[in-house]
Length: 129
Image (cartoon, rainbow, N blue to C red; front, side, top):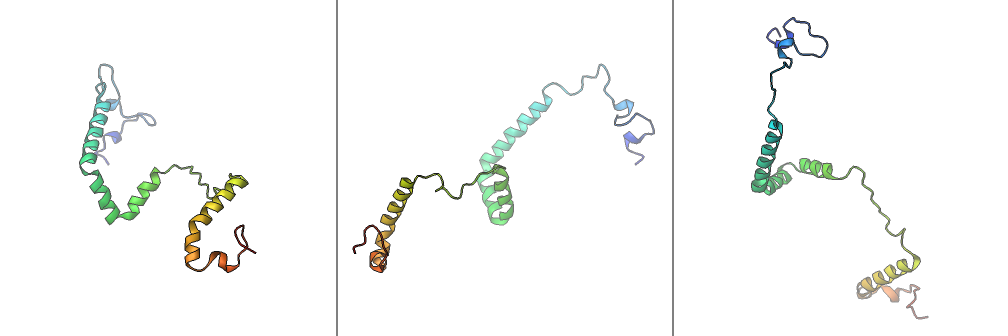
Protein backbone atom coordinates (compact mmCIF):
# COMPACT_ATOMS: atom_id res chain seq x y z
CA UNK A 1 0.00 0.00 0.00
CA UNK A 2 2.95 2.31 -0.45
CA UNK A 3 1.26 3.77 -3.57
CA UNK A 4 -1.72 4.94 -1.52
CA UNK A 5 -1.45 8.77 -1.35
CA UNK A 6 -3.03 8.81 2.10
CA UNK A 7 -0.34 6.55 3.44
CA UNK A 8 2.55 8.84 2.58
CA UNK A 9 4.00 8.82 6.07
CA UNK A 10 2.74 12.29 6.95
CA UNK A 11 0.83 12.47 10.22
CA UNK A 12 -2.36 14.43 9.60
CA UNK A 13 -4.39 13.61 12.67
CA UNK A 14 -7.27 11.25 13.05
CA UNK A 15 -9.72 11.21 10.14
CA UNK A 16 -8.15 14.10 8.21
CA UNK A 17 -6.69 13.74 4.72
CA UNK A 18 -3.02 14.66 4.15
CA UNK A 19 -2.34 18.39 3.85
CA UNK A 20 -1.95 18.29 0.08
CA UNK A 21 -5.49 16.92 -0.24
CA UNK A 22 -7.19 19.33 2.14
CA UNK A 23 -9.31 22.24 0.91
CA UNK A 24 -7.26 25.36 0.37
CA UNK A 25 -8.44 29.00 0.07
CA UNK A 26 -8.76 30.06 -3.56
CA UNK A 27 -9.71 26.55 -4.69
CA UNK A 28 -13.35 26.84 -5.71
CA UNK A 29 -14.04 23.11 -5.33
CA UNK A 30 -16.97 21.59 -7.17
CA UNK A 31 -18.89 24.08 -9.35
CA UNK A 32 -22.23 25.16 -7.90
CA UNK A 33 -25.08 23.02 -9.11
CA UNK A 34 -22.82 20.30 -10.53
CA UNK A 35 -24.29 17.61 -8.29
CA UNK A 36 -27.87 18.61 -9.01
CA UNK A 37 -27.19 18.75 -12.77
CA UNK A 38 -25.74 15.25 -12.64
CA UNK A 39 -28.72 14.02 -10.63
CA UNK A 40 -31.20 15.64 -13.01
CA UNK A 41 -29.45 14.17 -16.05
CA UNK A 42 -29.44 10.73 -14.43
CA UNK A 43 -33.15 10.94 -13.60
CA UNK A 44 -33.97 12.08 -17.15
CA UNK A 45 -31.99 9.16 -18.61
CA UNK A 46 -33.62 6.76 -16.17
CA UNK A 47 -37.08 8.02 -17.15
CA UNK A 48 -36.28 7.65 -20.87
CA UNK A 49 -35.07 4.08 -20.30
CA UNK A 50 -38.15 3.31 -18.22
CA UNK A 51 -40.52 4.68 -20.83
CA UNK A 52 -38.90 2.66 -23.61
CA UNK A 53 -38.12 -0.61 -21.81
CA UNK A 54 -39.76 -0.61 -18.37
CA UNK A 55 -42.76 -2.88 -19.02
CA UNK A 56 -40.64 -5.36 -21.00
CA UNK A 57 -38.02 -5.37 -18.23
CA UNK A 58 -40.68 -6.10 -15.62
CA UNK A 59 -42.04 -8.99 -17.71
CA UNK A 60 -38.53 -10.40 -18.12
CA UNK A 61 -37.94 -10.26 -14.37
CA UNK A 62 -41.31 -11.92 -13.69
CA UNK A 63 -40.45 -14.76 -16.07
CA UNK A 64 -36.77 -15.27 -15.22
CA UNK A 65 -36.44 -14.09 -11.60
CA UNK A 66 -39.85 -14.12 -9.93
CA UNK A 67 -38.23 -14.04 -6.47
CA UNK A 68 -36.64 -10.67 -7.30
CA UNK A 69 -39.94 -9.36 -8.62
CA UNK A 70 -41.61 -10.32 -5.34
CA UNK A 71 -38.82 -8.62 -3.36
CA UNK A 72 -39.42 -5.38 -5.23
CA UNK A 73 -43.17 -5.59 -4.72
CA UNK A 74 -42.67 -6.31 -1.01
CA UNK A 75 -40.24 -3.41 -0.68
CA UNK A 76 -42.89 -1.05 -2.07
CA UNK A 77 -45.48 -2.13 0.49
CA UNK A 78 -45.87 0.04 3.59
CA UNK A 79 -43.85 -1.26 6.54
CA UNK A 80 -46.76 -0.88 8.94
CA UNK A 81 -49.67 -2.55 7.18
CA UNK A 82 -52.89 -2.93 9.17
CA UNK A 83 -54.84 -5.84 7.75
CA UNK A 84 -58.34 -6.23 9.15
CA UNK A 85 -59.23 -9.85 8.46
CA UNK A 86 -62.55 -9.79 10.32
CA UNK A 87 -64.52 -7.00 8.72
CA UNK A 88 -67.67 -8.02 10.54
CA UNK A 89 -66.57 -6.60 13.92
CA UNK A 90 -67.75 -3.09 13.10
CA UNK A 91 -71.17 -4.07 11.68
CA UNK A 92 -74.41 -3.66 13.61
CA UNK A 93 -76.73 -6.61 14.09
CA UNK A 94 -79.05 -5.27 11.39
CA UNK A 95 -76.14 -4.92 8.95
CA UNK A 96 -75.07 -8.51 9.69
CA UNK A 97 -78.62 -9.78 9.10
CA UNK A 98 -78.81 -7.88 5.81
CA UNK A 99 -75.53 -9.48 4.67
CA UNK A 100 -76.81 -12.92 5.61
CA UNK A 101 -80.06 -12.32 3.69
CA UNK A 102 -78.13 -11.10 0.63
CA UNK A 103 -75.85 -14.11 0.75
CA UNK A 104 -78.79 -16.47 1.21
CA UNK A 105 -80.54 -14.95 -1.82
CA UNK A 106 -77.36 -15.30 -3.89
CA UNK A 107 -76.70 -18.96 -3.04
CA UNK A 108 -80.33 -20.15 -2.82
CA UNK A 109 -80.59 -21.07 -6.56
CA UNK A 110 -77.45 -23.21 -6.30
CA UNK A 111 -78.63 -24.93 -3.13
CA UNK A 112 -82.08 -25.61 -4.61
CA UNK A 113 -80.51 -27.00 -7.80
CA UNK A 114 -78.51 -29.47 -5.71
CA UNK A 115 -81.56 -30.52 -3.73
CA UNK A 116 -80.26 -28.81 -0.61
CA UNK A 117 -81.71 -25.79 1.08
CA UNK A 118 -85.27 -25.88 2.41
CA UNK A 119 -85.77 -29.56 1.64
CA UNK A 120 -82.97 -30.59 4.04
CA UNK A 121 -85.10 -29.74 7.04
CA UNK A 122 -83.08 -26.74 8.10
CA UNK A 123 -84.96 -24.35 10.32
CA UNK A 124 -85.02 -20.87 8.95
CA UNK A 125 -87.40 -17.97 8.63
CA UNK A 126 -88.83 -19.27 5.34
CA UNK A 127 -89.22 -22.95 6.33
CA UNK A 128 -92.85 -24.09 6.59
CA UNK A 129 -93.77 -26.23 9.59
